[in-house]
Image 1 (tube, protein in one colour):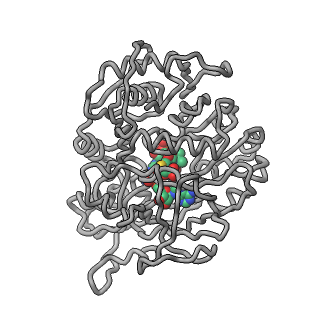
Image 2 (image 1 turned 180 degrees about the vertical axis):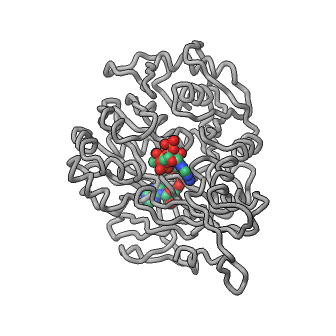
Image 3 (image 1 turned 135 degrees about the horizontal axis):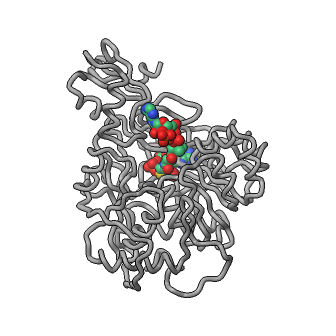
Length: 451
Ligand code: MLC
Ligand code: AMP
């Protein structure tokens, strides 16, 4: 099964734009097929291939090469600290591979659809990140559903500047473009100026990106000619939607998903926009609301409860963690999302929050409080630590740590975390406190830290 049919060597119809323009460097499909073929020929048979996922053509060539060879790709965050990097490499058993954009070789293989194409590491509430195993069939199915939902074709040009180590930037933003046959402009960083200059028809961004664009009227107005703006990875604040609608003439549609299920719910370009609401399920996807007692909750547009999803795009499980996989899977095979939502009688979904305060979303990045707490506790001066996500207009939430510690400052502790984990997992602030608020059972009461 072929994730990227356009690389089969047949001449491509369509425009003269290069298939990929990444941080100013371009490549056409023939060059991509040759360079990725050279990677595939070199690594075929490898158990898993780790790719340093910086926003470069080399990253894309390495990823596509591994996909061609049927070797599971493990994207390594470009800003990963040593602890995280070592964990990802040892947990996955992947070997780091590199690509040369000038190499050329032909490569073809007959691959089974149920093979694991990617292992994407993502944070849980506790412990180090877990590897989410995604099959080629699940990825292909999701990309096709999204292409259909968004009328995404080879006549589009996609632009975004998202990181290439998560579902949003890599699967949707690179493989989606290659599968749809639409040229991709990756802007390096998702700045308002870069989006304004990209001259694309389709733009992807996390809410922070839209919020920053909405704050720069010139950049937002430059998106008037775009066909479709899409927001995801966290909830889009209604004022940001409104401001984009005013300046660009159209607000972003939203879509919802998670690494474990891929994208399952979305607005459609032709729908009337409903700010604060995401949209309806993609074809073949089912959702339901489940109460604390395990019983069904009414889809009346008001009742809120945990959202469960049944989707052909679901992960094959967490690598090496069958217990964690079982914990998010119901006895009838649905996935517990951990998100709290309501569903209207017409099928529209609104994501209201998360069940656990221990999963933080900052700038669209998912960060487990437990992982940051463990990094803080590794400092010899720290006795106790609790990490929470504070509401923030720009990033959605910012990471704030509360510690009981002696002989160290908060900013030294922020730097200490930055030395082990990714930059985006570093607390913005660490406050020293005499004691953490605890309940009678001794459990830290994070809601009290949040005021
Ligand atoms: C960060 N900085 C800090 C800091 N944290 N400095 C001091 N203390 C801290 N605690 C630095 C940054 O490195 C950066 O430096 C500068 O401060 C500004 O940081 P920022 O405000 O965080 O902004 P920025 O780096 O510009 O990041 C914003 C962003 C980024 C939106 C570009 O958050 C981003 O790329 N988010 C996308 C996440 C994503 O793709 N998620 C998808 C998950 S998949 P410098 O030097 O770099 O300027 C998924 C499924 C789905 O969720 O549904 O899609
Ligand atoms: P990740 O695993 O990084 O892919 O994060 C998945 C989580 O992002 C989901 O469980 C949601 O909490 C959040 N999310 C993604 N898209 C949206 C959206 N459109 N609105 C609200 N939350 C979202």
